[in-house]
Length: 77
Image (cartoon, rainbow, N blue to C red; front, side, top):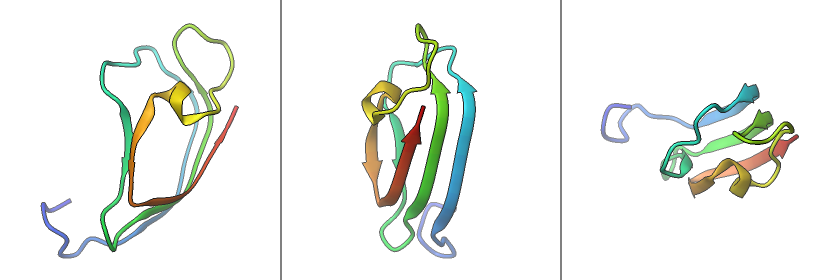
């Protein structure tokens, strides 16, 4: 990112899978696009948080609460 919207386009088809989170941190996870440059078609699968053995499904289990300018978020265990 350059700090302004010049030259920034949309991001499409993001996939993150098979992740074991060792430390969830203290701040919310985020997916933040920009107006006119959204992040879309996001797939999160088999994200295992600390203290669990199965993949998280609702965004709150991932502490994913800071969301803006996005579309098409899918989370599977």
